[in-house]
Image (cartoon, rainbow, N blue to C red; front, side):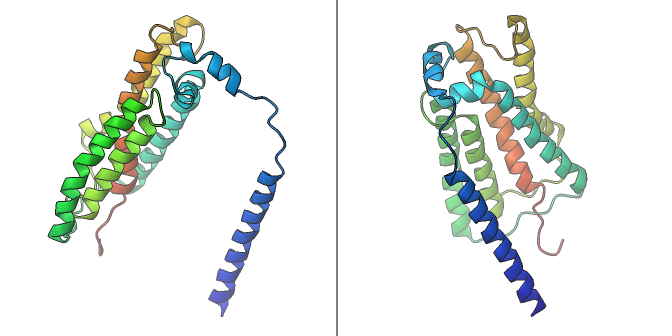
Amino acid sequence: MKRIGLVALVFALAVAFVAVMAGAMLELGPVAIDLRTPVAQQLANSGVSHPVTAVLLNYRGYDTLLEIAVLLLALLAILAVVGDAPAAPPRASHPVLQTLARLVAPLMVVVAVYLLWAGAFRPGGAFQAGAVLAAAAVLLHLVGLLPGWRRPPLRLRVGMAAGFALFLVVAAGLLTQGALLQYPPAWAGVLILLIESGLTVSLALILAGLFLFLAREEGT
């Protein structure tokens, strides 16, 4: 009975929290500043033709830089907790599932490349592409084709930090323009594509690592 009461209390608190948040959202007033017009006016100088990518990688690029830093710090915290435990062997799975995963994983890589390329002019970009690549790695692990990560080699650690490091290098180089991540209009598209390419690889490794570094076989 005590456990049932505790579950009921948690459920009631969760429902109350959702109700409060929903009420707050419904009471939101009109937007004080409509940024759609200034974003559209400067879109030609952003290096991309999609407003979301322009905001994330140009107008507010430092926000995206800090988001990558937070994800990297989360992964470093997991590595500090997990330590250098030996890698767990891949879990045996049905051959049919493994065959399907072998067919699906390359398609997911193709989708990730498309999302990276499409981010300049339609919804997509490094975060979406990296998430798809990470999902491919998790899928391969779940069917027993990829072991859990325990002792990441140097090249893997470099790959995880490379996107953030590249972002920092570009930001430092652009400080000569007088502001952080203020791209020259002629080079904006190239620099954004360079940053997103590096971030795709790093985000894929970071997101996959958040799962694979904690993946443990039953009984270990």
